[in-house]
Each structure stands twice: as C-alpha cells, then as structure tokens.
Image (cartoon, rainbow over all chains, first blue to last red; front, side):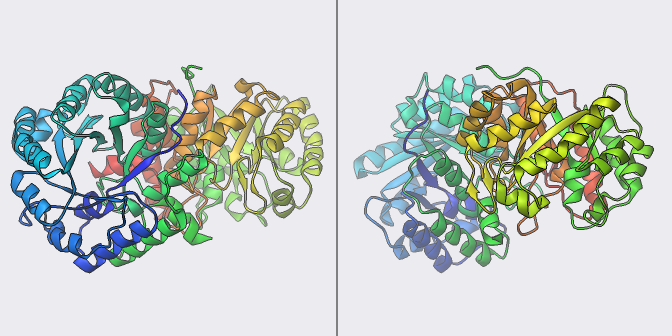
Length: 299
Length: 299
C-alpha cells in the first residue's frame, strides 16, 4: 500500500496537552497558543474541554478561550464534551465540533470514568442526538488501544467493537489512542488492519504517546496502513520529557518533520509551528518536548 | 519483504557515546560499563578508540580498558583505529576487531579528518593489509549518509561508492551513519535500496541519531529493507537529551524495545540493559537518554 499524499494533523496541545501539564496557564496564553497554531496553518485544533473545573482545573475558562481566539475559515476548532452538560456548554460557546472518549478496556473505563465501557457508550447517545439537532460533528476517541495500565497488553480484537460502536452511533472519525505509549510498530499495523474491517480506514486516526520512544515509528507504521489523520501536541505538551512518568504526547513538530521528509502535504509551516511551541514552552517555564524544535534552536 | 528474525545490535555507547559526552570518566567506570553490557547479553561492543588523547581525551586509556574487561566467548569487543599507529596500538592491546570511518561528503571529510574522501580511503589500505596479516576483522563506517552539516542533503548515489570502496577493500560490514540525524524514513529506505545494489544487504548496518526524533522510525524503515544490524548507544550516550545541539545517539534500550515488540531476537536482556544504562548515567551525573529506561524507572 502506498503512503497517503495528504495527512491531517489534529493538534491536541491546547487540550490534551495543557490538561496534563503541572501548572495551569491563563486564558490569554491559551488564546495566543491557538492563534499561533492557526497562523502556522494547522487545520484542526482541539481548543479546550467542557468539563467541571473541579475535575480538570487546567481546562477552566474554555468558553473564554473560544470567545477570544481568531477563527480562520476552514479550520476546525473542537472541544472535548464528556457529557451532555459539557456538550450544552460547548454549543453555548459556539463550538461546532466536539469529541467524546471511551476506553478499550473495562479496568481503565472503571477507574477513569467510573463506569463500564458499554455504559460509557450509552451515555454518549444523548450527546449524539443533541449534536445531530445542533449540526455539530462528533469525533470519537478510544484510549488504551495497545496497552492498559491495569490490564497490560490490549488485543486489536478488543478495540474494534468499541471503535465500531462510536462509528455506528455517528462519530465521523475515530481516533485510536496508545494512551500509555507501550505499543510498537508491528502491533500498530495489526491494530489498524483489524479495526479497519469494522470502521473504514478513512475514518480512523492514530494518537500515539512517546513514553517508550515508539510514537514516530508507530506513525510511520500507520501511514503504511493507509491512515492519514494523526493527533499530536505542539512542543510535546502534556508529556514533559523531564518529568518522571510523563505520558509523553508525540510532538507535532517531529511528526511534521517526518511527513515533510516523506513528501506528504499537511498545509503546516514548520518554522511557525516551532515558534509556537517554543513560545508556549517558555510560558510553562520548561524546555520543548520536540526534538526538531531543540535541534533547530541549537543551530 | 518480511522483517529479519534476528538482529545484531552493535553497542557504541562506550566509544561513540562516551567520546561525545562532556566529561571524561575513569577507566574503572568504562570497564564496569562494558562488563555490564556483556552481562546483559550484548553480542558486540565498541569498547574504545586508539587515537591520540590529544585529539580525543575521552578515549585515553582504551588499552587499559581492554586489559580490564571480562571478555565473554562469542562476544566481539572492537575498537576504532583511525590510522596505522592506532591499529598497531589496538593489536598490542589484544583487539581482534577494529573499525575505520569515512565520510560520504567531501566537506565533512575535509573538516573532520583534513583530507578528501578518496585520500581517507587510501589511508585505510595499510590498515587493511595489517589487519589481514594479524587476522583482525575490519568494520567500516560511512558518516553523513543522509545529511551533512556543510553540504545539506546527501544523495544515496553519493554514499554507494564510498560504501562499496570500504567493502571492496575488505570491510566485512559497512555501517551507514546519519551523523546529524536529519534523515527521514523514506530517504532511509531509498538509501539501503541504492547502496544494496553495490554492497550486499547482509553486510550493511544502520547507525541513526535521534537529533530530529527520527531514529527509531528510520530503524523500522531499515528493517523493512532487510537490514539486520544496527548501531546504538546504551542510555543514548553521546547525545545528552538536555544539551543544546546534542548529536543524539539512538538509545539501545529503545531500539531493543521496538525489536522485542516485533518479535525479533537479539539475545539481549532488557532489564539488565536498562540497569547498565542507569548506572553509567549516574556516573555521568545526567538523566538517561532512553525513554524506555525513563518510563520503567517511573513505574
């Protein structure tokens, strides 16, 4: 199978990234980050999460962030909406696309959102109904697709029905997340091989964490399976490379560098992206998690 | 092409790695590192370099290191021998295998070893002759195979004749090094495609640096080209991830983790390898450059 000619990068830094950073940042700094990403040509930005600030204090002020950003035509500005209340808040903030997430394993689902996998899927039904009536698109995430902190290795056959359920209930795309970063390239290929029998490849995305250094090899393996959408986080936000046990989001700069080397079009300007990542890293007072950004800064 | 079933990892940490670390370490610590690697099941260790300590102070005492290590039967303990004087010192120290290196580009050759590529190859002739008469095997390195700090992008067609010359003069294996780490997976595949028309694949190795985060994806790309020998550096020695402009040797632990995930045999014990890397990192007073080691330490 030949590699895709175009790839869409889903920038999760402002949400998945900042949510997992130790310190909260201001609404103004979040707005600046999203605007910088827009200026760099990023076509899809997960801006925030409409969830109780009691649970995720870093995501407080998502409505203010949406109100403050400059929205460029053709760019998707999405938000996580874990429940109907969150969905309604998102719609009130003018959000046109939301994301929901389920886990591939029962243990992770129970410990993370306190219900079984099938219960979590049922809870999305009212969101899907509301989304249809508001003309809002819904993207689905499946976590722990290659490994679970409680159950260990996860089989592709366990992931496929969850991805299928999200697809069947109306998610236009399902992103498969290696949440703990333990997956390797061969398992990644097999994952997409098995899941694509249930959900068309064009509606699948890959979301890799670099905890074990495997993320970019997994992206390359996915490309060979015809996958053309990847989630990534500018500056590797969400996985500080210096912290013990960091979850390690793959850095958008490093994925983009690979894609450019392969001659695959994304519409993103690497120089501007690197600058956006260096700026937010400075705000957070930490080094960038992107090796491309580090190498370029050192020149 | 199916992936190789077995891979040989050439451990370059004690030489290429330590040579590029800021501070020198004692002979005793080097001996301990090599012994730890032997105990972990590593089958090939580049122990030191027989070069004037005026030029590379970190490599002083290579003879003492060779005298101090426990040599396990079946394991190769090699040394770099940049000239005949170095070769003779290596033989006097009991070394049975040496390595020589050439560059793929004229500019790098001139600035690094002060002569043209063809001159450097000619200088190896007396080493090759002496090696034959002493029954010493010679491995060849080609640097800058995917990019040069002075010439930029390097074409595979420029690398092939240098690799071929080393092979023709008697190097039993030629390792292709992406010295500045700028190469991406597609170029890596093409490199081996082109060079293997001149040198059999079974006599080629890959040597990748992670400066731009691409090293492991390049290893995976090479495996798909049938390459079954890779150079790597325990704890990512030689490319401190925290230093600006680090050259970034790929960490052996991270390569091994990938290979284990692919079901490829190397004979190496990952736990012991991780311990060896953590110990030398402590000696150097810096964090390990292996993400696998970091993730395991954080558990």
